[in-house]
Structures are given as structure tokens and as C-alpha cells.
Length: 201
Image (cartoon, one colour):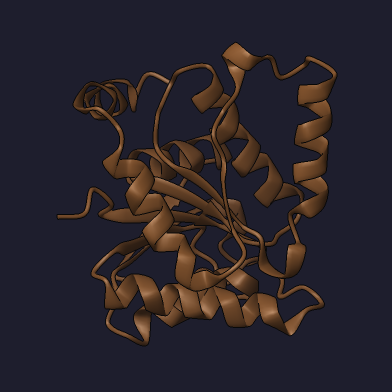
């Protein structure tokens, strides 16, 4: 039985310039639905956020959108979602997204997507959680970030004892198997830790 019940997807509220981004996000939403895995995401109905949610909903998937009040109009909150949680601010949004998810997948996006991704990487690095983190490297989108991370390692700002394992998948069909395999390798003590400290980040 899979350890992954819900996947948090970070992605852009815009579609980007490459049609492959929307195509991939839609396909991943469909994959989650077909495998009985819930989607937790930022709650918008536009851009890649809308694409991944629509992909899940159109194939019978369960979608939880979490969006702060001030973004409900700007990002056109998705009313179709089975659950739409409106938070008071970004901090509450990110906390709830963490608590409700068993893994994190970052699709292409902008500064907000990068910030959410890096926060999870930081929490993992500091031992605050052990949930899988994966970069959906569609058409090499995340290559510059991977180069930067390698540069941080080479210059000893990411030291061996502070390394965080970030998975990378170039193809949508590889994402779910990779995060499921990573979750399956976690010891029970790590899974218990994630539950115990979810509200103490």
C-alpha cells in the first residue's frame, strides 16, 4: 500500500511560454486521480495551478485548494475543488499545505513557487521533516537551480551533513513512482516525526 495519500504541487499561476508546461501539469493531475492520490495545491484556477487541478478533477480525483484571502480574486479561486480552504495569510497557507501532504512536487513557476520549494528544502535540511521533495524538470526548467545547488555544494555553503535529497524527474510518468519509492524507504521513526512536528515548524 502506498505511503503517499496526498501530494502537494507547487507551480505557477501563469502558463509560462512553453506549452509543455501546461500539458505536463494536466497530465500529472490525471495521474494522481487515476492512482487515488489526492492533490493539495494553491487553490487557483489559472495557469499551471488550474491545469493540474483540472487534470485531477476531470478524472475523478480529489482536490484540496488552499489560498489566502487576498489571492482569491487575483488567482481566481477554483470553486470546483472538493475542498477550498481560505486562509488569513501566506504563512497559514503554507503550513496547511505542509500538514496535509505526504510529498512535494515543484512544477515550473515563478518566485512564489521557488520560495515554497526552497522552504521545504530548508525544513528538510534542518531535520523538520523527511517527506519526499521532487523537481518536475519539464523541458529542463529547473536546470539553472540544479546548477546553483551544485555551486552551493562546491563552495561549502551546503555541507555534507546539511545536504537535502531532492529528487528530479524529467517525465511526468516518473514522478509518482519516484516519490512513492522515496517514501517507502523512510523508517517508521521518520514518518512518526513528520506527524509529531507538523504543527511545530
